[in-house]
Length: 95
Image (cartoon, rainbow, N blue to C red):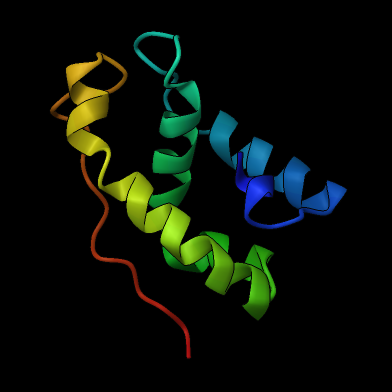
């Protein structure tokens, strides 16, 4: 789904996959899996994920990540994440 906003290199795709595999698995699987992936990526520390993208890519992803952060309650309601799962701090943006 990310590639609908930004074309990724194979290296970027592999690195994002590794980052996601380090995170807890979903509590359930279903039609909103893609929302959970975007939510988890959007809530990674900015310093950890922003360096993977060039400035153009990062700018394009900001809207998608902002929408993903807004899906927290929906993901809780659907059973994908626990209410106890911490939210990330407000994202920092490099100039």
